[in-house]
Image (cartoon, rainbow, N blue to C red; front, side):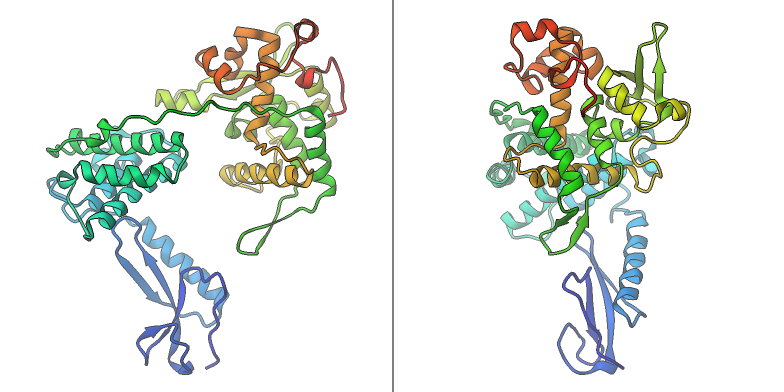
Length: 420
């Protein structure tokens, strides 16, 4: 049998020698070697492995992926299903079931994004590991958690994360222990409620200027499409519709999921001929925890309309084709991540020193819209009040009084132009 080989990124795969009874020994017992897939449950810490049949690395990767996928699809049932006398790790498994609305928690079914659930469970695992590290133990039961455990964990995350992230983590853990107390009927105290929120530094408002945005669009055509990752691999950031995507984010001013979901059929005409995009207000739907659809309207200004006409609006106006990624090559989450990474990649390619991110296009849109519509901006942006807009999105120095008087809702203050 020929020698098995591993790549630099091993994908959780090792070479197991049946004679040495060890992984990756470097021995020459080639006839006794197999690829082996290894998986560690991030919550329970339990290890599972499988000797693979594949003799080629690429085939081993596929077999390993199927093995891990099967494990993740299994329903995680805590060791103590009946009662509430279980470990902190088992409690996290129960909470994951609660967030998913599984089994006994179907009546609490929540309209939560997979990203939110993944982040929340990640915060809980961090705390679980922190307790194990601090106490030098393998497991602990929730009622045994005390102030010292919270203090140790708080000190760790305070030195690692931004204050806003720290506050989010503490809120997630507060909610988790409320679940144990109120839903699981565990008699204990929620010490996370004693944590004081960290003060947030004044948020620096960053919006793009026209020449900066133009430079980023030029970089899409002229800069290398390949982004080099930390592990040396390359990702292709270019797509034929990438410039359209960036313009859509600037002109619509919506959140990522709202913008990338837009289709030509979402165009709406008022009785007065004003054009809008009608979008589902996903944030409100999640807050309301309802299956009812909430909508909001994104007005189409002259510059925006000219861009849509160039894309074939007159012919596609009633079609169900997506405006971004019309062939629907990417899943929604992958599409959002691709555009986010591409914006940063081409911003660097345009030699722009400011650390703009994709969300700054929304800030730019809301800034100019605020100066045209004032307090009515919230009706478009879906913000509850103007304080949120002024604190986080509106650049107070963007326009003089005279410029404001001449301005309508045109990004960068242009009266009418098609050069974007």
